[in-house]
Length: 139
Image (cartoon, rainbow, N blue to C red; front, side, top):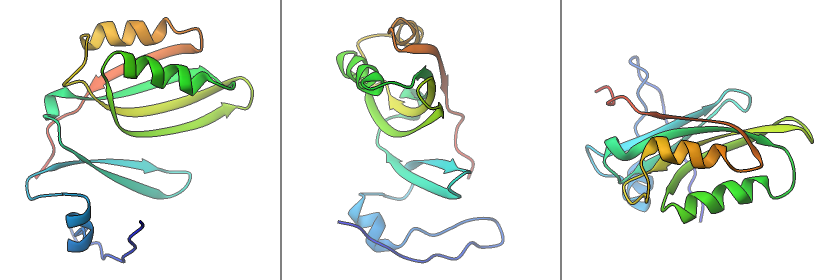
């Protein structure tokens, strides 16, 4: 199911998520949401986060642009008990390299963040992996 609505940005840059969407996505007051801006498409994706902010990380991965590369990455994350909250992937050089930015929940991870990064970099389709935590949200 898809919901569509228009919202107005106020003078402080805030947008109110309509009640029907908040209810459909179980977004409650005080809850943290991840905002991902795709500058090329000029769009923002909003994803609710149910995990503690200390367990949420951004995982940026440069990988080979070949069939099955993304599947190997997500399979490894699944094996390690990592929940993917949001993802954005794009080809950088068709047939050569791509980039994925994933927002991940490590609350049920079977490893610590540094070991996760190391195991991702060991995949034969991954060239580089960076992992960083989030700052506390403003407001």
